[in-house]
Image (tube, rainbow, N blue to C red; front, side, top):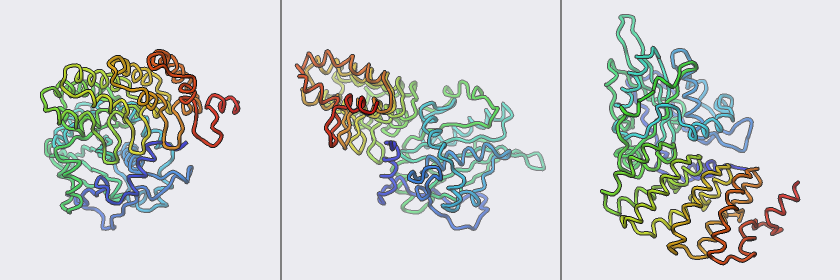
Length: 439
């Protein structure tokens, strides 16, 4: 079954006017290549799975791993990233699962920050590297619906002078990286300083970089413990009070940052609060959906509790809660469906519990409740079918244990209940029957 994330990113690449695909700068302090820049993001496919394209998340992770595996942190972009054939030979299918695992279990030191604080964060990482005798590291940068890589290296000249080197790699400039060097770890500024002066790139920067948030997920060489980043969160700057921060906090499971962000919301005008809690990326994927897709149980729980609190305290209108309970991706895939598909049973439990108060307050009519519970995607496949097809019995058990009270409240008929179990495909058989037929 094809991943929803693949569908979303395919939409990203086939829409030519997507501003989040604009290129980062090709300029650097030390330009070491005269090769023309190429954009091969999404052009190559995995040799092990020819129907699946190699996107920015795969390229950025491969670049980060290449840097970590080289003793000096160097990456041969011309050899491995300059053609479709070289990318296919170099990037294995396992990078897809590894990237998803990275989002579901962010490494120690992960943080969502303002892009203007990028240099400040680099200084903190360099200080930890120096203190622990680590010469190089990498990190994934997550911005909107796009991923980049950054590699950090501490070099010593023949005269004993330390140089701090940062290279930013954007998969949209597939065969080059932006490199900058300073003699102090505090010499680096905001991320937008790495962006070219071209009008298209500046439009992208204005919309998704300047005054916005970025997520940093650090990666260390083999044998270096993540414990070197212990306590780093207390030194990192706060995330901006901005929709982009909510989006990335939910996508990467930064629970403490989510709590902090919600504490700041009541001081804002209602319009700004709504913009933050309903944040979407550039392809229309909501923040809540990303948390449900990536299995961030605590974030989903806190999010739903805080939204209910904002409604109860009359800070936002109850209609906003009703809309969030129907959270869907751009292609109309319900958040509950994606949690069923990936087997996140605790999220199923949390989300259905969140229906209790709105149901008691009669904010949801029968038709709306049936739509939420059916969890049907565009082809009519319901969430229960997805859970059964992918062998997630706990999701099914938790779901069925919750609908008894709802069925009584709304006087749901047997036909209503069967509709929750039915896939709208040619045979019309309920998914339980279809599952039995498959053995």
